Length: 311
Ligand code: GFB
Image (cartoon, rainbow, N blue to C red; front, side, top):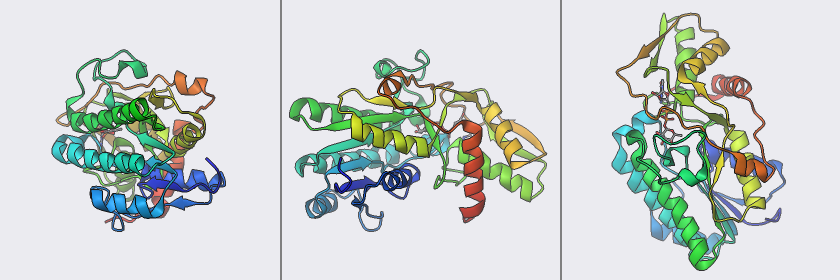
């Protein structure tokens, strides 16, 4: 990938896409192409093909998706599977038909079976039942990952995939009904502090374990893979470290400076008990994360206070 290569970042305003744009610019890539959702609806195949024909991207980061936390995934499975398959098929299909040199497809660690050995090795894919709360999203992402592998195997297309652990950072979704746990708790503890509330409600038992990777590390890993990896095997990306939701809540409570109580609402779902990724394959290529969890949460909280527009 040359510094003036035509690089399309699909989903450039989202959590991951915006971080990839920042990372590419920092590394001196000057010819970035992106379109807002209103300029280009990726669920519209004709519009996507017209865009690829006109813009002729050489490299594609497919970071656009319909995403959400446990609550959104559990409530809207048809939307999650249908819209993500539409987006993936349109972008991967157009990338093949318009001779894109390389495409990086982004998925998620929820593609792995609910109960599989930890840490989760890439080979465990499809070895057991999926977690029910995000089965729809997981099936879409598994299909995208496999589609890239099959285009590489059948046609020699250089389409690769990366499966990240739970991500967080600037430009995340802080809506309390559709967000992931990290932005949700940052907002909940912030609002509890400024409104002098007596407690913050945390969903579930607090017992599930989660791994968190800052999105700037995720973006750096994606650009590293685009620059250095051409294999058929999908690649896990994470930190290899996990915390319980209760520990996460205590950390965010401390960083925000909230002095009230934490209450666990066990009527809410826990979801997958653990999903710690085995990141040894990516580490063997020479890439490792940099941003530790506490430092990343402090930076995200600072961004949140300075940028979030409460709806
Ligand atoms: O981040 P999260 O929504 O998604 O939930 P998953 C992680 C854990 O945090 C669950 C708990 O056990 C939640 O019950 N939690 C506690 C909360 N308080 C809250 C809260 O206020 N909001 C939220 N959202 N969670 C997602 C998948 O699973 O992981 C997606 O559904 C994707 O498809 C994403 O794969 C990376 O980590 O459980």
